[in-house]
Image 1 (cartoon, chains in turn cyan, orange):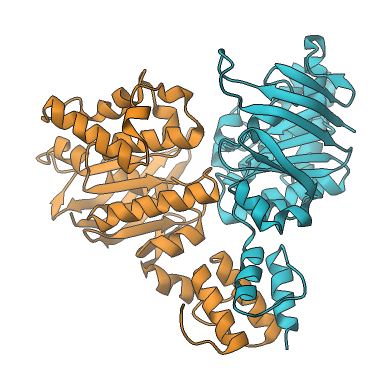
Image 2 (image 1 turned 120 degrees about the vertical axis):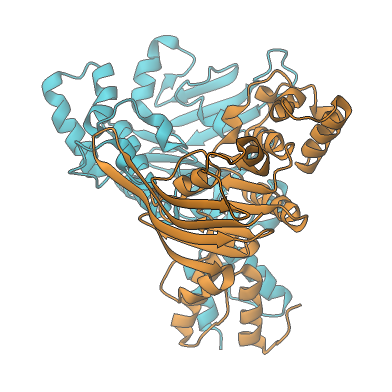
Length: 274
Length: 283
């Protein structure tokens, strides 16, 4: 297990009266694509902010690639292994030139100066943004900005990449660009942890962790979780549209062979009906 | 209040010295009581347009009229403009700063002529309209609330001024689906009560469901404007549109038949029942 957590609890309140996380056990395999799904305030961001020690562990145990997150001496090593892309692309830039922005993390890790240009270029290539090195981040579209933010993370060659609601600010094209990027990195062997409350973004994950009121209420195969409408209802998550159509048709007396989770599967099953 | 936008252009120089034509010769109008969505790719000029309408930017060329009067005319009362138009910016929650929720909501009323009892009533109304229990929330620190709650408090601060026109820039980005639905229903109720709503959003499904009219921008120009449903239907099968439209398009291609008139989820279910069961009525 690349991520191994037991009994993690966290409270933002010094008086410990309300918990943002309560007794969460977490295990994620190397190379897995996991989606952490939950409504606003369910604790999903709080949970993943423990993974690279943006939040300090208060209760429980957590190791990432064998590193204990509560060991302060390992924080820099940990953050190199576990990179994170955030929701708002505009808040993540530290330079007015793309290449300098991507180089920022490398400089902080004291990567030899002569190695930096090549690493910046490889990172740009990975996010399909080669040729954009001299551009100003603010001249780019939302999807492009997120890809540049991602390139800054990838330049450090992390094993685990966390995407914290990275599509929330994007237009429909930008959203597709970034989702495509997640799938590509997963295929390349990276461990992907994506946080979202949009089920349609979870359909490509290997597994789903369902959070509600600071607790993990379910975890399992994506298809099993996304078709369990009762469970999603408890989590206050709207089922994928394909699942909603399946059940509405069932109520009307039309039974499809099995419950689809993507729109493509739904269309295919409807087209097969006599 | 009638908003008339006449041949509006806005040009600026970006930090690298390049001239950017953010808006070019935009003309359109928004009637009192309309619920208008503004859509277009990132960088197409949506935010520039609303900043101009709210009088927060001055046009390079052209005019914005409120009930026939040019808001950039020197004789136009800026206080009247501020009271008439409320703007909720992207991520309004980062603008909260007071020690309690009620003080934060009250800030916009600092210079109003309302008496203290009327002000308190107004704050209570704004917070209750945003779905809060006033007594429970009033003394809480706005900074200790969840993201969704902070956003509702920030919007209550704009509502408290009771503007005739409310402008939202991406208000539902980052809200979960139920939060999104509740928020859109709330805005619809404000619209039913007579407030003109202008909303920028990338969320096609929400716009299709709730707005009455759409303005479509591309590279600083209005490329379409009209009734929301007509615009969505006019895009045809091969554009992205709403999610139900995409599903209808996939089924239409696969079955080689047409699932017509689908924009919203209810349309899709109706069209499928009609196709598969021959049911003709919306239930």
